[in-house]
Image (cartoon, rainbow, N blue to C red):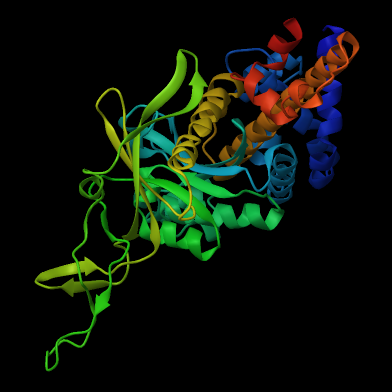
Length: 444
């Protein structure tokens, strides 16, 4: 093994020290770095047997026991991951992106596997679905949570839950938005900092999810279906006429679908970032509204209508393909259209993280069937991903320092403002469009 590869292995060992302290038992402390090295190192398959062979271990029993059978608590490692992620990319200008990712799987015995919608495939498939939370700043993502969603075909079958080792506190059916809010609370308790929560329409359509974010004092920008109802921002509740049998106040105007309220708006071209084929752009429009997600009530002659709820932005996006998308955002009323568009489109970093963790770290390669094994494998892939992001950010920072020294030696600036270089995080974002494995990095 080359000296450079030994270098990253030694760096991984140092970086893992706080995680290893939480494991306590000597055997687990020995196996954890090996499992992570197997995930990060070369090889197409990142399940325990091929990783053990590549690592030169006499058998795969130790790795298997560590990830699937040993009795250890993942919570301290999850908390340490949240703290590390915060140091890398956390802050008031960071995003917390809520999403989910599907792991296709045959059979029906592995925990959580059932016919359900697989976002990666764009159709229903036999798979597991993991709710994911990603902390990101300036296009640099760090995955901080992966929690299995259990369909009702699982939560309604105690024998099946017993066989998969699902903990008692995880057996009640919870929606994906409910899981996301619980994971968000866990991350906040661990000290992760972020300024705005982003999510697609699968989460944005949930009024309890949006209201839960607002109740926590968080800003948010989420996708919604085009038919989601909103009121004009100046809608008012009026009392019933004297002598009317109904004593409830009703809105003075009716709610309308999001696409209708923006139909006649001023649509402007906005570019939010540079892609591989040039600037990414679309036409956007936005309007302040009151979301129709208050208490349900008969309004006029229509039953089960909703009263005006929180004030928010409704935002529309018209793509060059002709496709239209709609969003809600609780960003302040003085937020500009370009800022709204940038917030909405910042969600793409979670897709990048999904792809990299599957293709390069083997997130979807776990072959066991248990709840504990799946979540430990997911946790170690997140730790590996965070380590690689740490290396990349450190390398970008060193590169910026070298450029500063070179510029200073070449020509002392007469006008410092004209020679100011971008911040380290901005440099990192510019030079890190993909996540190479450590071996690819050392070979470059």
